[in-house]
Image 1: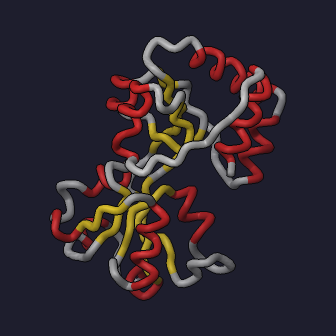
Image 2: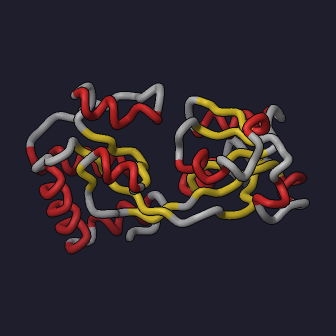
Image 3: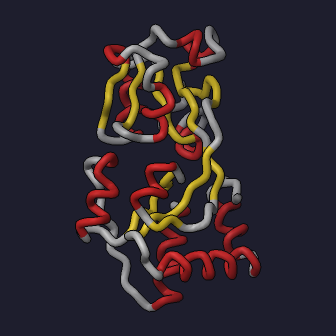
Length: 201
């Protein structure tokens, strides 16, 4: 999607090859980064205090939010997390969505999964009443014409911004910011955001 195309555009600019690695544990992303098993985290990473403490983070480039998704029948009955706190939720472990509901929903009502797509599947199968995922994923994967036509958004829980994480003191962060600014100026970033229905910072 968007981040994939952006990664390739950046790699072409600086003359490097791209190798994508799937993290089985999103919560370990900064450990993986520090160990050198990956060189950057570039996949819808929310800029948080934790990210800024553990990595060199690019300027923000895309706006995001965490949203509650449920089937249409459930969604028709609720309008807030407070109203839904006794329901069963599915979340990606250590994701921004997980952090949004920690302490607001009882631990026994939270199914912690490997990724957001698994959380969606839990709701679709009826194993969970709702899930918390990125609005970008919710916009593209739920509602009419999608694989999850019976699922819909209930409400938004926050507003976020995405950034790209490199190892501390990396000189590549400044280069990413420079190329991103160029792509904004020449309209390429806007065109890419429009293709994937995203809102730029």
